[in-house]
Image (tube, rainbow, N blue to C red; front, side):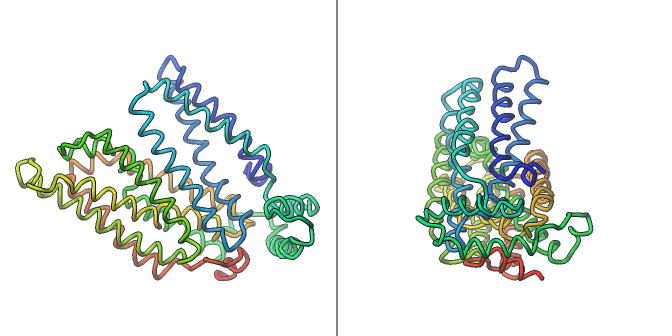
Length: 382
């Protein structure tokens, strides 16, 4: 993989180029095949980013703030969703697409001035450069300030380096367990309906028949997404991953069940909004978003970088992320069909039931990683 061959930083720099080209193809394309090509490239780049960014953050962060830094990724994703809702409501799609080019350009410029992951550099035998990179990340005045941490990283890399990854390595219990847990977290994230709700927010509000303008309601949801991420960030390294996942699943379960109740009562009332319940769809969605961003939204991506062993991180992370985006595609593609078969209320109760199961998965299966080094985390599975 590019991440293992060119480094985490190098891969991010490289991916910015096809991402810029992709947005240009979408904005300036003159036929549907060009649009398909551009859209495929954007999706490809985003899928790669989700792997590389979380691995990079996990490797450069201090153990005590790794969770907080890991939340930066979903915060920026949430900001991008809000940006889409706001700008997309006022600009034609061609101009909106051109405006998106600023983001891969900013990524390229920003990453150009940031060092490579010290763990990756140590794995390539570049201890001196790794020391300088770690010193930069920690803001250390002298090498002595980071010498002990660099030595710990060196031991960690020596334990996992030099192993040529084979299919048999991916089946080792110390790899299978964290990989399955990582996939399980993303599985319950997708089956909570997150991407369906974000993609179809305008249509969802339109279908409620509420007096609230769908575009305004969508922007309100986008604001709640960003604010909830910001509010929850300090708690990830105080309360721990597992307890936040449990409370997150409980909140999503209740919110989606309430949304299902609204659509059920609306259908039983001859498709007329039940009296005094016009507020319920927006309140339920805000409750869902708040709950999501306290746990099952950002934490699966954070733990993907924490749980999977370094020597198989590229291959295993790619496998998990590919399965995740495949599930995302299936959920979005089948949403309208599910709504016709189950009714809108049935779809939300379907999502709610998976959130309920996600409570027990988080409590009984997911290990707590708060405050642990990557070496200590991987020792859990040995």
